[in-house]
Every structure is written in C-alpha cells, then in structure tokens.
Image (cartoon, rainbow, N blue to C red):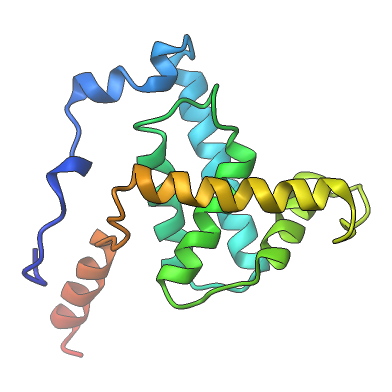
Amino acid sequence: MASGRRASSRWFFTREQLENTPSRRCGVEADEELSCRQQAANLIQDMGQRLNVSQLTINTAIVYMHRFYMYHSFTKFNKNIISPTALFLAAKVEEQARKLEHVIKVAHTCLHPLEPLLDTKCDAYLQQTQELVLLETIMLQTLGFEITVEHPHTDVVKCTQLVRGK
C-alpha cells in the first residue's frame, strides 16, 4: 500500500467465508443478503448526505456495516438500526461527528418519510437512542476497535493526479 500501512488480515475473506456468512448460516439466501447489504449501504448514503458529512465518512460507515455483517446475521441485527450506528461511529472517527439526536431523526426521516418527525421526549426516540448507543459498543467490539479504514479509491485519486501532473 502506498501509505506503508497494512490493513489487518482479519478483513480479507476467502470465497468460502464470503459464501458462508452468519446470515447465510441463518437461512438467508445469497441474493437476499446482497439486497440487504445494498439497502443498508443506500440508507447510509442517504443519511450521510442529509447529515452533510463527507463521502469519505459515508464510505467508512459502509465498510463498517459490511465488516459487521461478516460476523453477525441480518436476522439478528436489523439493517435499519445498524446503518445509522455505522454512520454515527464513522462520523466520529472521520472527525465529522454529528449529534446522536440528529442521526436518529435523519434515520427516522429516511425510513418513514410520511411520518412526522420524532419527538425527542417520546418512548420510540428514547428507545432508539439507547439501542444505537448499545449497538455502537457492539460494533466497536466486532470491529476489534480497528476503526481506521484505508480506502483504495484514495490511492487511485492520488495516482490519477500524478498522471495528470498535479
């Protein structure tokens, strides 16, 4: 790698591991798991744009989500709460932190566009707050506290700039 750092081998998977994820072992078909991953990534993208975080932060959150589901099943952890959790954590890591209240409200708006905004005093909001904070801890543990992500597109951009002479 150009930076001289090496990504943990924990995040490189064999074809067999990719075909035998926790979701697959719980009976989720491959195409359904792919669809869940795509929906989760789309939700992260939508939320990230609404929260006005960088594309790097959004990409980091998507990586966290994919890594998380290599160790946990979609049947046990709903993508609609893992996605905001991943984005909340990534925003902190990439130094673009957003208030928990804003993340929860944006997630609610994305998932339930026809419903009114959540009242911060209602039970649903308080439950989501507690759940997201707990899941952030579970996500950190699942990631082994390896929160720095080396994105390959960063090196591609640098190479392109070198070729262009910038």
